Image 1 (cartoon, rainbow, N blue to C red):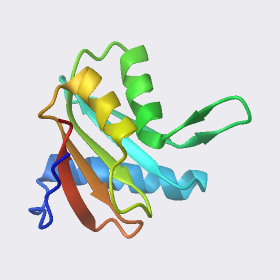
Image 2 (image 1 turned 120 degrees about the vertical axis):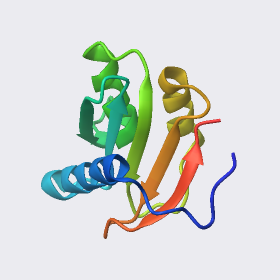
Image 3 (image 1 turned 180 degrees about the horizontal axis):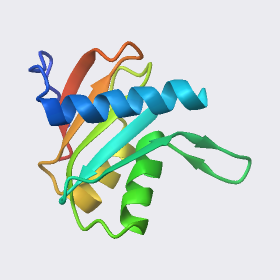
Image 4 (image 1 turned 180 degrees about the vertical axis):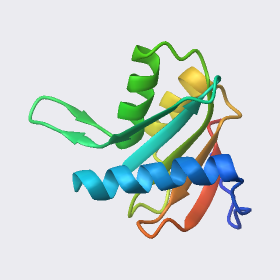
Amino acid sequence: MTQSSDPAAPGPEDQKIVTLARSARARNGVPEGAAVRDETGRTYVAGSVSLESLKLSALQTAVAMAVASGARSLEAAAIVSEATTVTAGDLAVVRDLGGAGTPVLLAGPDGALRSTTPAA
């Protein structure tokens, strides 16, 4: 997995999904928030899920919501978390729906972009 160590400033549409992910994290009081943008520009926002019988990252939850709503591909994904890297599982779920080139933006809780990683 290749990660950009000096991510370029996100464009307005990418900044929007970072802001939405940050908002979901804060509103729901969960460790991470995520947002994805589908091929039509619709966005899906989610927080991480931690139940006794079900554990999903915020990004897995957001992608599941997109699929359940009829999305056929993804343009971009964003995660807001304390984590410093995107997990292989999160990259895989984005790759499944978006393809290897779909960018996954990782931001800290303050919304500052840490990295942009293709889902390759």
